[in-house]
Image (cartoon, rainbow, N blue to C red; front, side, top):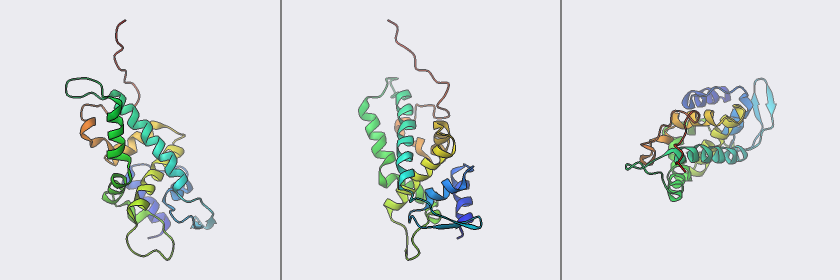
Length: 178
């Protein structure tokens, strides 16, 4: 598959059209190799730096969702629940599962000598890098990250069942009376 085809496929899967296509390609570039795109060679970083940004952006959005969430009795969740959400949604295994289930593995750029399926770790890094690329491309807008996370199924977790995950803005938690 060509770079433009990989890019178009990834954009379709995540529901985000990149303004800066090179940022999107960097997110897919697990090899850190030069990329020929749009008639010229580009030296791009490996996707692991965008993955760090993506990891933090995911944590930000999950943190807001956790802060809003209540259990079935209407009580706000403890700090331990945030750790549970992170473990269940943002560790390598669930991130890789998310990427594979959305067929993003076919979009990851590997070394020319790579044979076979990409590893779970490579897929998890690519998912985080894609989210990081969206965050960067959007001007660091967490709402853009939330939209892509929703598209990828992050908010189907049972602990978020009582949470309105449709927007980050416009929600206020009731303040206790003094």
